[in-house]
Length: 163
Image 1 (cartoon, one colour):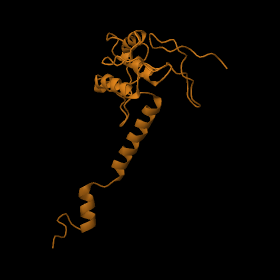
Image 2: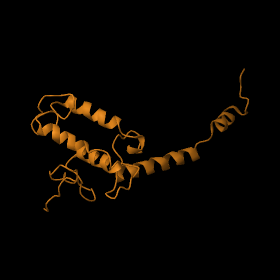
Image 3: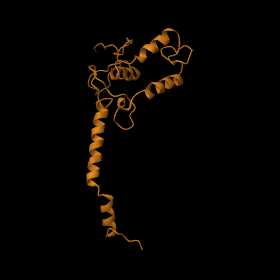
Image 4: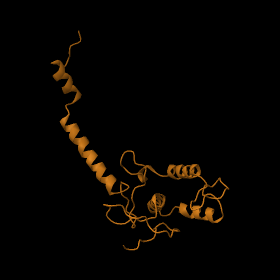
């Protein structure tokens, strides 16, 4: 068993998350939140790193939520799950539409390469799912008769039977 690398998010020195079975390559970060922060930082490289604010607040003994003056829970940047959710809402509401994965229903940040190449999806799995769903939708549209054709074939004429 080899050693795992360190989280790529500036300011974090934790080991990266272990890869799941069937995954090609290793993770870049220690967890999902750090992955989202890393991608947001790569997407807008000149914007402030939100993780540094979190680290500063925690070093001062406070929850990462700006309006809170309670200490964080041990091993976590926030004092409660509700403060984490409030922070996450504030963070994600500041993202632009093109920063979200293109797959319907996904709220993750698009993947951004180390050299700042922006992708349309959060990862390969969602890219593959999108391509498959798009192909299925296109196939269904090609094989389905148009609404007008359906009316004509069911009534025998375009006027239909209105008596």
